[in-house]
Amino acid sequence: MSNETSNDKNFNVNEKGRLGSKANHENHTKDVTKIASRFLNMFKLFLPITIEVKKPEKQPSFNRKVMYTLMALLLYLIMLSVPVYGPGDLSQQEDPFFALRTILASQRGTLAELGIGPIVTAGMILQLLVGSRIINVDFQDSEERALYTVSQKIMAILMTVFEAIAYISGGAYGDAVKKDLGIQTIIVIQLTLAGLAIMLMDELVQKGYGLGSGISLFIAASVSFQVVRGMLSLNDVTDTTCPTLDTDRAACQYRQGALIFFFQALIRGNVFRGLWHPDIPNSPDMFNVFATILVFGVVIYFETMKIEIPVQHAEYKMPARYPIKFLYVSNIPVILVSALFANIYLVSRLMNNKYGAENSPMGTLARFLGTWGTTDAGGGQQQQVPTGGLAALTTPPRGILDVIENPFQAIGYLILMVVLSTAFAMVWVETAGMSARNVAEQLIGADMQIPGFRRNPKSIEKYLNNYIPYAAFLGGVFIGLLAAIADFLGAVGTGTGILLTTGIIRQYYEIIAKEKISEINPNLANLLGL
Image (tube, rainbow, N blue to C red; front, side):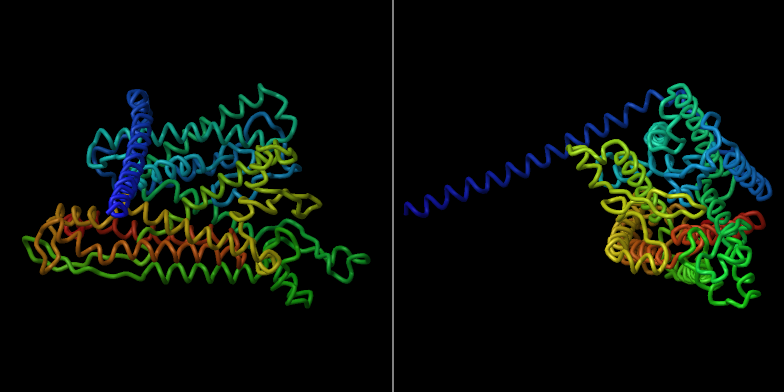
């Protein structure tokens, strides 16, 4: 009897402990949510003064949308060419953030120094907060939606200021600028205003004046420029394996562009050298060109894979199809993962410069984020690259030989890319209005129904849950895997960049087709939900 009583007491104590632990966890979660919600409410102060692009009262014509899109692109290209006032000529100095340029659509020493990085980072932070339910936002409520938009803008501006300071501290403008507070302030102001301009151009395109997304447009333009330069660059490179280097240096000089290099090698009777020369820094070869074409073809093929859900109009009973693509969230997860990796790279470089050599807690943190070494960047220049820590795992080895030399770095990068891409895909579905619940509401709102099911959002949501979550998960896994492999193959313009650009071009093809249908027959477009 005493043992039973003792066991009962122990059971009660353990049960109370478990309940108490659960209650403490729930209270902690509620406290975090309250703090986050208060943080979001702070941005209400900025609602009256925030610059915003209003949606057009009347839908612009297709030609006008094309004009606005090209105008935004032209302005961005101008920003990529206009140098920042203050640091002077940077052409002969090392670019500490060269690995970020293509994905962030940035150009060193220009007004677009930071590219789309601050905007994407701010959006990523808020998406994670909303997706993890730390912040609850009802996107059907116009006031909460407006507050979310303002919060994203303010955070983007804060991220611009932070990244501008980090670039200066990380040595992007040389050591002389680090000692001149006045020049530093001028640079930060210029980059902040440029960041605001990029944000407004993106909003102009997205609000209906243009086609697609400004961020996608800028990425595609940046990567396309890198691809053209990689294939047709006229810069000189020297083949150090050339047998006549000591006697006839001119015979060992080639053009940097892969296509021109190949034809020069063909004329000189050394075809293999034109096909494969990974040992010449910053000089893509035809293997890289073939990898680029392969990635382009694979993305186009899988972009067309889809499941079509039969739907019909509730009143007219006209049959139609609602497509659920295999790449349901497109290239968004890779953009978010790339932004995360870029920020890790940036912070690691900054911490390494300041604390890397210290035997202190900050030094340990700096080494955990990344250890750095030098590599040959061509032209007699040395380039700082991450050789260990988290920064190395978030930087892909480029090219087959680099993967063979750094297998653990390649495996770590592959795992991180796939896992994070999948996680971002699942979060994006919930926060971007693409979940089964959102699609069910959209179909009901368009007077559409699924044959054999009641016109009830719950019934349609249950049916769509058999497809949408799996498409998001598998699409996230595949797009992360493909991005990593494309980087390992050394595709021109970086594998991730080619992957993004191919998806963006495909999206623009579909957008233009939909716009054409909408302009020719608005009633048909409404019926199809375009």
